[in-house]
Image (cartoon, rainbow, N blue to C red):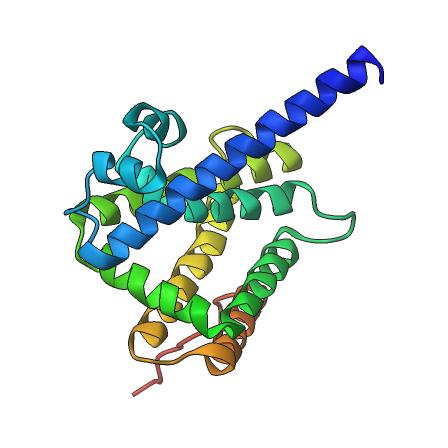
Length: 220
């Protein structure tokens, strides 16, 4: 085997080990958060549960909030990446809707619904987590707006790309709230997934058709 091949395999192995360590830390943290709540759990406890040092935890997750939101941040990044990498002829809205519908399939799992309900309760009880969620969404909205502006050749201070980014991320946040509310009230599995898909289609249809005729106040 060549030296180049050996080096590539070694790098690949290190990366896999890093991903495994990251997943183990996150899984241990989520288990503790679910048992005792976010605020009551310390980094030292997470490190012991994952069988790593506190320094290792901080190497992967600079703040405790990052541990909780690692999956959410990945999803927000996936939405922006889907817009950037969409196929010719596909609009920004179509790409965004496609990813949202694909993700809704995961709700068919009752286990996934249980996890969401537990996460919603944990977030509701933690001001720090609510603040961190706002930061994540704000950053994703800015990234999406910048991606749209860059592709369309808009000026850096142009309003239209920002409006589009806020509208799309607004749908994502509204659907997330819908999922949390339904999961928290006991809806699970295929029924929850079907409800979310219906709301997703309705929300994006509204964006497609615009607001000109929406909720027009009847004349007296």
